[in-house]
Image (cartoon, rainbow, N blue to C red; front, side, top):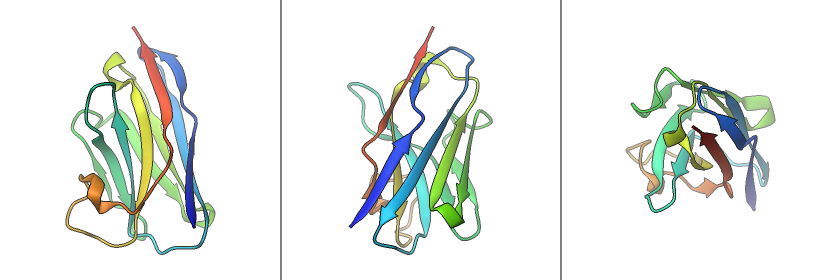
Length: 125
């Protein structure tokens, strides 16, 4: 059994920063990529960013490019999301996810095999 646990969410003012973490535990698994998604109330879960586990190539949604940075610590099986210049529209539950092999797109939820339970990020105006 694989467990993915996010942490670091909270309440922040517009323009502020937060750093999310996601750690995997349990049965070891080979990772192709890890990603972050978010879901705001009444909306579908949307892609935020992803990173290939081996080479560290990153992908970002246009809405967060130049504000958010994804990174990983392979030794600790942990991925991070540094979020700067936060806006009210960034308010959502943020989920981390891991894929075992590539399924054609980093941007789709179906690509990922394991998911965390989510952490709330609220940006006040």
